[in-house]
Image 1 (spheres, rainbow, N blue to C red):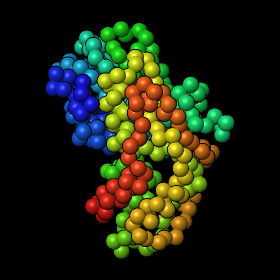
Image 2: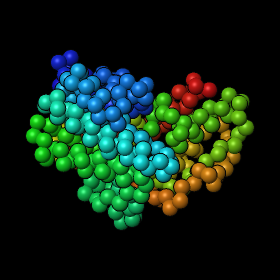
Image 3: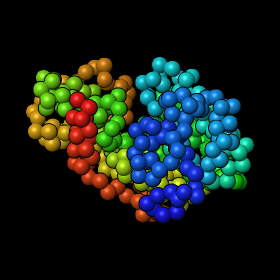
Length: 306
């Protein structure tokens, strides 16, 4: 496959293809959206999934669809597990029934790592998994399922990923950086007083532009090793406060920052940063988009919405 696109001879389906990451992937590399929120295919409906896969006969699958809200997973763990684990199982079984012989890329989450001590940073793929939310548990289970299939289903090539925090233009404002950008855009337009409402800004995270992330997914669809798991991250540790300050600087806005107790997560991991050495060594991937460019584009999109 060329790096620029998936050729017409390869029918690629993208579960969750109309979501934040799926939209960016399809804009650059193509693919058929599958199992989206419009109700065409519900991953929890095993028979419907099987029928749809039999009809489409894909040659490659990028599996992005998931219930991705940590807060929602605490409110409804059963639904989260149904979508993230049983939905993945239904998809794998449907592919097997259709005699699928292509590549399946499972997009997991760095949330599976859970609590890390400072001595364990940056996090490598060999670290033990200590999930601390129903969402993270569901992703651990689905990842383990995919690994098992990679070892026992010989017609598949199954590749696994653990993306760290992905940000970029178009992200839903339920997520922190998108929400901060929305607040800044409202301040800039005069629709909001200069008060930034935040959670805990002193935690650190490893941020990757979604457009760099989808480039990694495309490379892994082409050349990722069966049964191997890859961190998708920048390798840079940044505090949320530093990103808020940069958004305000880009916008030319001064604002008071107020912490909202309702936005604080109990027992939150204070520091997190990943090691992307494995994917870099194998495929030469590393992030290319600067944080300033990412935040500028996020703010521009937020201003369009405002």
